[in-house]
Image (cartoon, helix red, strand yellow):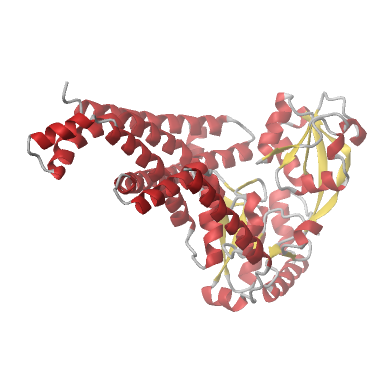
Length: 213
Length: 268
């Protein structure tokens, strides 16, 4: 117990980094993903193309590379940002692309007949989307969206490349110092706990949205 | 889709060219006056590198190099700030001015001299070969056909390559790990037969894990020295740092720091 307590402050420092990166990325990337989906599904061809390219770029290159590019690459063209901001921007841009495709899948999964029925019933486009389509989309994107959130919990460890000390980095430092594997197990337990909490939250959300049965 | 993929590839390629051209011509001026104005010098270090610079359980940044850097920088009338970095990107961090010094068991090599300036060496180091105590590897020649591990972007790797020894290893090259701890764990698991590492770090590790488990071969991959990495353009900082280090060597404060961390004076 004393042994675990001796590691607690550094691990908690790391946990703090992991948590803010997780929450701010989720808060930023989900709305941005929605915006990208809307633009991606718009009628304007150039807008569609730009969004397709953005998604291709974000999903087509490793997040690690994007982190390095934003932190070390942008200063060359005169844009200097600090470590935390650079990490956050890279994570949000990357995750928004994945969320956008999940949302698009959700919207496209709704049968065309429902739009026709809404028109026949005299609903406006906005009424149709928010009253009929969106409630069903939310239900359908919850499981794949949750998947993405769980991946995000663990992906936060990539921030080590910018020298940000997350949980995994803290445990590796302790592993080196003590020449022991125990700090790594501790890190594993912390990630498991975080994912457990996210899973629980998602389950609650699914129950809450369990309408139209 | 095909068209956009092509477009993206084109953009990436043009960035590659842009970077290739600009990074070579990064001739910036001496930053000493900026540093003085800011009042701090940012020291970049790998916070997993024990015992030179690392975070202890309470999150405190400690280590031999950390103490040395604090003392030297305070003699310049400035305050030392420590920024953890990824060791693979240390020169990039320095040259993009995210940090002002690389000070973390940084071995002086010819290859690195092309990218940074070094202060005078302050510590001697050897690249030792560590094997398990029961191993039948007794000499450097026995490494032929064995699996050998080292740290990525380390001076051990450079030393191995300089001797052309890598090709004789099993697999034609050493196995590279991000930290030495991983390499030593692999050694203990028996998947690699030997680890080539900085003596300073290897001694620390062996003392932690138990002297009886390992043996350090008498032959090594060469002597080397630790220095502090300074940006090429920072001539003033380099000169002042050299003066401060000389002063610390002569007035015994460097010796005291060495005694504290290694139990003996190994300052050069």
